[in-house]
Image (tube, rainbow, N blue to C red; front, top):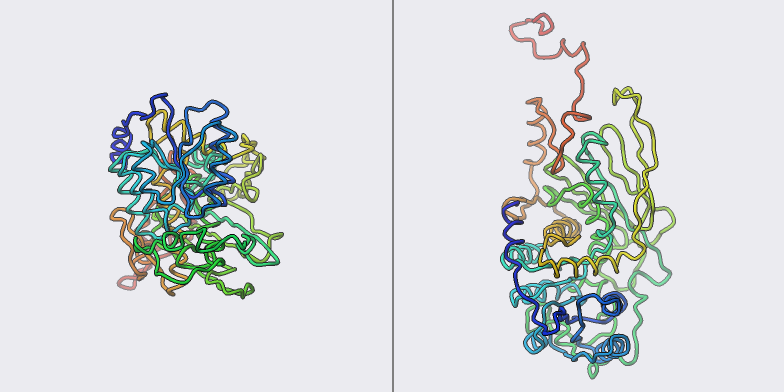
Length: 472
């Protein structure tokens, strides 16, 4: 992996095309978040003097194109070109980068074609619609060396880098588990708060292009405002809470622990309340086991919000307990009892952290910094991290839908159906009295990673030839 990382960093050498030295950006999908986060944040960064300019917007909905272009013209004093087809925009505008905020089923194709065209990419989460697409994006990123930021903005919190350092140093001892959540509630049903308007018609929206029929992204079907505006509720276009919400928290936990691809994943849930024609569950859980000997739990309901589980990373000698969401300025260290740790000096403490009041702003600014430096590894949410997180949650969604347990080989990046090999591997380690596996970069030695043999365990073992093993 280190070799691949070095190759990525070395290949990113493309010069900025603009004559004024600014990075020329085109925005794909300036609709909901594409307008509120991508367009407005990039426009603000332009106003503040960052070396960028938004030169084009692309959307299949004419109202969204016009709204974004008008906003940019008003705030940045330039008139961006407007396109319905992203390939035409790339071909004509001499872009340096694109910011992608289209529906999930378009992400991989647009990111891949943009990187292959020599462009840097900001791609809204989830990075891709399928695991296979995630692996392909990862391969193209490594090959092209482009700067690509995956849009999980909470990864721009300084917190997770600090937590990772403490974990690697052995603050919690052997890391065993993380749990996280994303609870929500609504009286209309999740994602139905995206309004349908009379102006949404086949005359204002290129429906066939939105579907991606010619690109093989979806089957042709009659125009439907509900599917267009609330596509996260339907499997062909989104994956509900798995990809819209779980990927946020999962990415943060992977960044904190240093873990990447899972070894085994199972998902559960169902549609238990929101019978509104949706495909995706309103209650779901993903359990992911990692080769480093760590389990991850991601769970939520879309029908109750005031009683979420805590976000926690657990180790043999203690746990870190975080607030919910990303708006917290400290977290708690909760030690295990001295009889376990052998250290009476371990005390509960509140650990302060630096706050990032606007993580979306920080995340886009970080992307710009990486592009200026021409260094893909400066991105707070790299493609490697993005691919690992989306693989974890999507295998959970597939497990729920298909009734399977999935294995994943992080070396070959291959998906396999569940079997007995996962349990047998850990049983073999136990019988061989091996030391535990650890998170990447572990520097804590054996602290919190070993258990003791009580004296009476000398009496354990099979009686061979009727000989008491305790007499050896």
